[in-house]
Figure (tube, rainbow, N blue to C red):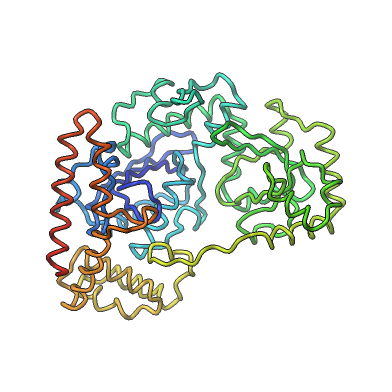
Length: 463
């Protein structure tokens, strides 16, 4: 089974923006529709949507506050319930690995639900965009591709789907984009069957790890702005599935010479482009083709590739030293400062997991009473946010005032880092881009009125 899904959001920041619409279609293995689901929600009070995102998706300011729509918390709870009924399945989107997946992980987490739904309980995931990009190089002529303003091959779904026969009049509506994604997936499955079948078989971490075996060459396909990159590689670490990424060496590099470099020269070589050592994520369905599949589509490994493969297989000690050198070069992740950034600081304890279930069962006064019972202070903050957004009267006056002051500070910060959340002053500046578009003046005026009302509401509360 497959679950094709898409989100429409308040902006493109996967850490600080919010899902406003979610849509999914369940299909069987032949990509025939079995069921569908679509839901929208209100905007959270501390989220300032990007004006251009509202213009593109057709979300009006009235929809952001529409009390007939579910709250963000209720929407995420409904999504979890539906997806768990559909599973296990392979989750697929268009550019989902870079955008929808990290966004949905944080959305579930911020609603106190398990964040990794698409990779647990025998679920798996894949992304249709990299397959389309790979097809542009491996299967010329299968797709008609748009051309970007710079003259490069384009892959935007709202342009690609119509060029290949899909009626995509409602582009940037989540459900319409899901339908377009399935349309493209069916072309891949039919006309690029080796690529499709191989990628589907690599969606689960254990299955991909069984393909990335030390001593066995594989063909790796990826795509950059400049175009496709296709290279033969070989895994050299011995961690199997007990790691999130496999350490792989490019077989087009001269490892006979690299292993003789001194430490300084080796460090310089490892950071040179193209990097001869790559970490390949095991749970993101990268495009990895074994020798048999690669040969069927015209990419059999040449003699020098096989020679380098044999050399690496007999150089375990040198490979181990290389991995140690590379590990020392990696910079640590920066420490998270804001709540939204702290999702990766650990899983909830058994006791907190039980409290989360109790939280979901309780009414709003019961939810408020549970806030400070969480051991993890991140979960306390998330629980308080949930209650404030849906039932602020369930909080004490002190907690309501504290939340309102924090929201006001976030909304009105004139010096906010543009890489973090969007502020009202920043959104007002962005309105100029909307005004330059067709019907932009009226849309920008409505958004500006909404922003002014939001700012006034929280300024008055916090003063």
